[in-house]
Image (cartoon, rainbow, N blue to C red; front, side, top):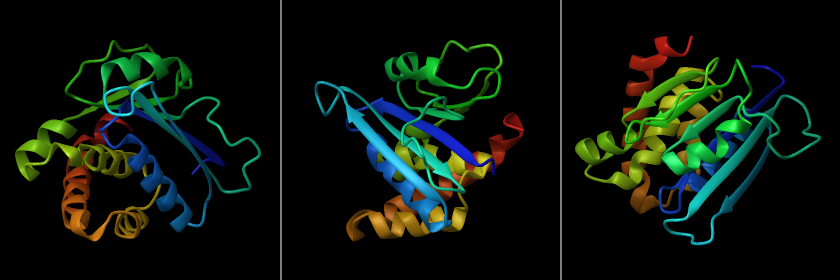
Length: 184
């Protein structure tokens, strides 16, 4: 991994964006990395725009906010539109939920993940889409290890929802494996 990886996760309140950012942060910490995480909600928590930023480093982090994202994980069109300008030109990776179709920026790599659709069809729970897309991103990029992601989910998710989220993780890994050729 490069010395610093910067990730923005974005969507709308209620999609579990902040939770996904927390899981990613914990997974990086479990991998022995230095981590900084921040998040923000729009004017209305549920339904308003939200984002989570995660900075992962092999060394202490001097500036805790994303300057130029290596990866943007987007679950909603409006949020994508707001944060696409913060992705590193000509090298950033965009992983988006296929429930919307982003206008692609030249020089960036785009991978669509059917996160919401798959969570509804295979788990009967759209709320697990955040873990599906995060796990697919981990499988495709190796930003954290799969083992550390699993342990982060087990540490953070309440017991009553843990099995659902671990199933969502496995589904995300499966989708990410199928799509990984689009990223490399």
